[in-house]
Length: 439
Image 1 (tube, rainbow, N blue to C red):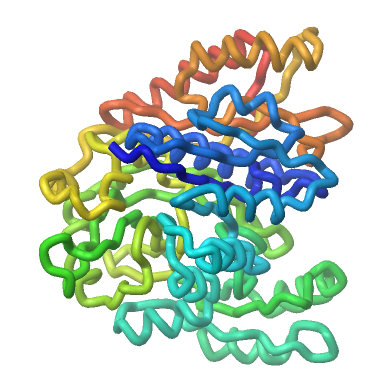
Image 2 (image 1 turned 45 degrees about the vertical axis):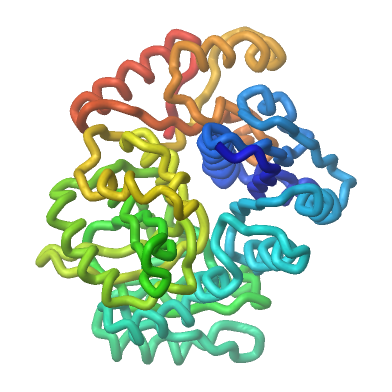
């Protein structure tokens, strides 16, 4: 369809951590997004270039990319990135919002006057800042938890301010970075004593160059909506909000000494059509013109079915790995306005179901690491096509002097029950190859 050059960049697997240990959780999700989005863009006829950290060069065999360039530990990844942008007509960027990574990478594309297929600068800026997002939600008259920036006092979080807000909100609270991505550094507090213990214990560890917020805690189901916003191909003064799916998120709020942990999720949610109809009305009342392309919105559905908007993810989200498995069309087609005829497809309930999750595996066999990489894992990939990120042991996943393997899987079945059955079968296959699932 489109024989033009497209550069796809995923920050974690593509060299953004080339001088640091690669975080296994971020890597598994990042590589899985890179692999799936590359495959789906390839189906549209693009000539694709991407980057990969040299330490994981063996994973290039699983990418449907025409050109894979490797980033070495001593390389300036931004220089290689900029060269790839220069050589392409289109760019699609996947990167975390923290430290302005996503904004800076998107700006390079805009400065070089290339066509960006991910979210533009205005949307990235708005979604990166939790305070700007809070203001945006209030301006659009949707329910959202009360949110405040935590002032610093002597280089530390102002404990008095946090305790005052705890009293004012009359609920438990969340503390998290103002520019955080995913479940990074999200802490939940139910008592004042927990807050004081946290500030005392973490004052030397928290990065005070970043801003933090205190937010009202909303009890309910952690859900998200994934959509593509575009200009209507027939009426240029109208926006199409194309709902791809609504997704459940498994977020483990451990305690006030451990930040939240994102464990994956499933799609579509129960009572999908009812929730979708509700969102169609809400989204039409919102000004989403800053978000052109694919993005996600995290929200809480309370027990009374009311909706509270939490944040906007101005980029491809992990849910996409499951969403593409439940749709009868390539969702990326809607990034290009000529696809009017398929618009009706998005209004019906998806006919398939997908669990998507990261697994941590411990190997108890006697094969060498080289044998595991070259023989066992390729066999697993054939037996378990649901594996998106192959099992990999990174330096950062060492536990008790053992290397823990991490992978990411995504099922594709008729319903939730059959997905659970398939997950059980996958665990048996791992066990047969001497891998035990530890998380």
